[in-house]
Length: 208
Image (cartoon, rainbow, N blue to C red; front, side, top):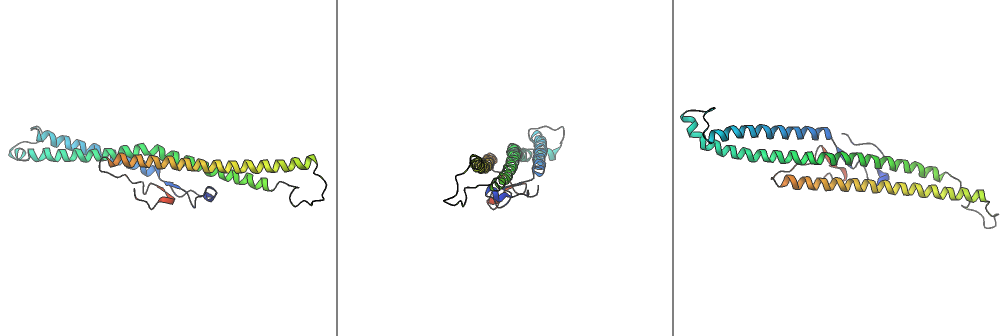
């Protein structure tokens, strides 16, 4: 997925803060799943040979390699476990990534709407500005216009603050999910990096 266009500066971001390709991520999940399955099958065959099964491999050569077959099977089982760990980590992270993309997009839309509301509020008349000290008292209608302008400005400011909070919460949740993913994969001696299919743009230089 390319960088999403929009006025991210409204939210204090120089560019799209969540750049991700969930399609590529899903392809990786499938790849690791298939690799783990294939390795597990190969390990099972080698283990059966090592355990004395001669249905697939017979003769003096088979006897000579039984011990080695068992050792290789154990090594493959460990490798399969690492692939499973990466698959599980990515599978668990994908929903959080999709939420991060959705919530950050919603925050941007809310911020742009708040900006438009703020511009409309600024265009509303305010007869109290630059009013001469000896000017007649404001009429109820004029005061009502001033109050309406101030209320509209407050609403737009509150909406902008809410949009910024929404983005902060989305990024915080995404970072938390990324940390859990790294811990989960790290327990098996693996590292499932977000790059290139997912990254936080303002922190894209950090290591996985």
